[in-house]
Image: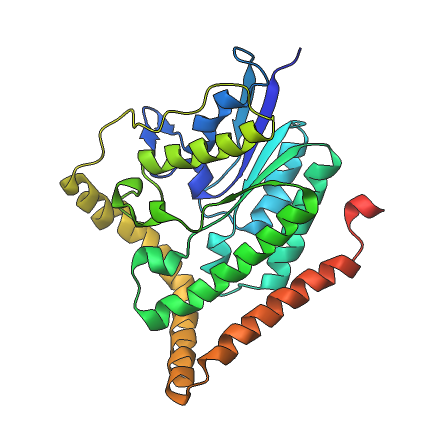
Length: 285
């Protein structure tokens, strides 16, 4: 019997940022892999195609073709936060890309793993006028992921809510990526969902970290070096637009019309999903 093939797609979260090990990064998907055997002791072949900074376009155009060549039994598609952090954000495009990705793997009979994700503005502790536009975008992405996960029968993890978000021990120094304990929590919760569906017969990942948490000085050093560079790269692209969004947010609050922004975002999501029900998908040809 050939080994179970598990392929992970996505961005820095799935790549393993926040969970360093000797020789690189590990992350929740690698921690989950051994538990995906149908029976204890059977082999799992794991391939991680996730790349830091990836957006839904990268998953569709680069990672999906490579993953399909591997004929995965299980594929994880956890993506979307980087789309919300770009001035090119378009919920219609995000929905269309995710629909194509999920359809491609579902047509091959792969079990698809998806997740909704936390609001990056809240995780970073941004001021309200800056955080609210990002929260609105992340809610839009999560709504699309929820709807498409239902459509394609994906195994979906509600990772955008819950007490674990407020537990500082779960998060790395940058506050956007889980630390080792957080990655283990994600792997454990995915394993529980898969086991309940009869898709995981191997051992559940341990919730306890293998390595000590970074010291405060190490965390501050990271923020002063790699963390600063990470923020600078994204601010170059997003900050001008985010400032315009924040100014618009404050104008609406001053007029008492903030609800219009939420209604507009909800209407955009509904329109994006409605467009998918009438468009011909690759698997419908």
